[in-house]
Image 1 (tube, rainbow over the protein chains, first blue to last red):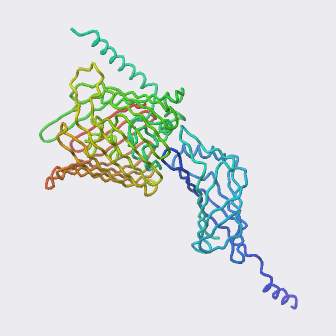
Image 2 (image 1 turned 90 degrees about the vertical axis):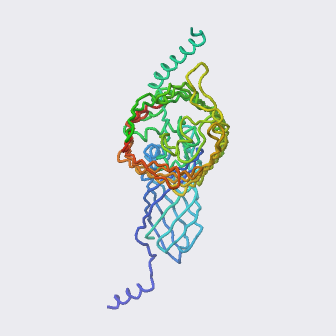
Image 3 (image 1 turned 90 degrees about the horizontal axis):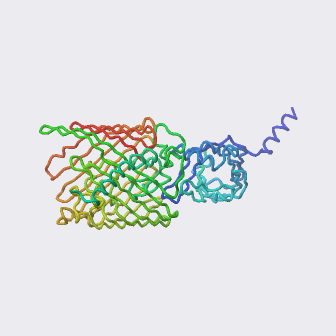
Length: 168
Length: 362
């Protein structure tokens, strides 16, 4: 009985790090071309793992399934998959460093894409402690990705990325 | 007695007809304006066409994606020579259209069929910023003799979003639908090409195209003695088209034109408003034009693409000559099918007319 109350007492003081349910979301990108139109890719599923919320900050890993991206045209989708080599590198992973989970924040972390790991900086808008939209820019060359050039139409090297996450 | 020079020209014309027909079998680019592509993220026609306002020869990129608008296609089938031969930086383009139609109302029945267009175009992408284009061919005018003309030619110089284009082509105004018999295309459709200097800027959010027109000149190849259907002094003035790209597949715009007509004795000032909404399977577009003397012209279209390359469209075409005159719109049901790259069939019917077009395009 004494042991029982001892464990109960320990439970009040020893609070484990709260690891929440797996958040999910969607990722998209917007890339400009030299031909007066943009290419938008949408629909990549995002899963969050190892999410930690502590001391008013959230951190964790967010995995983007690249093969889910769609640009609205089969030929463009095919070119996109070839450019990103999604057969070899099917996912991108963003490791978010601890960030306050309210309002608008500058964020940082490490982005793993196309087999390369580079620092990634952007912004996050928290509409609530569990919902956030992350935006940033990726320079394809930094990740060993050659910006596609199809029939004299060239994609710009810097791509805008947006990730919408809920359930943090 | 016909002169040796005339005989030579006739022989040249016959050779041209033969060559154009043969070349059309080998080469391919799509030469129809297709505003529906806005629904696939191509806000500006410049993405796929040499002509800033769309229509006519397509760029190498436009050829490359032609397979995306056809029901069946193989990889690179949409390219020139079906992708078998790479002739870049040159490009060979063209259109062969055959038209059959019947019109009937209370007083008259008219039916006809004729080759509407047999055109070859040659382009040169001298660099990523400079391109040249020339189009010549035979164009049917219904009951009038075919004309052998070089209708359009242009040189383009681009620098990022900016472009300057000079030559002879259609000034840009409103939505460039392929059917030049619709009321909104009467002033700016096929056969109304003029000598122009055009400046355009295209960004992610908007497009502005200014065309200074210097009149429509006779484009018949020398030696063609059939009566000219062109008046020399018309088509002088300018057009301005602006479009706002509000979201993917959604744009609105305003156009203005000041153009001389009627042998140069009239200056027409026309305002136009257009809107487009589309997805890969749905297209809705509309244009409204205000002409002098309170005449209005309008066009509306809603289209569905249940199968890639197969469109079912409802169209409305109207003109109201005077404020109190009846509008008398004509409503069309249209089926447009592109079974494979380079091939298009169109059937369109209203209460008064039926139109069939077969189109082999380069």
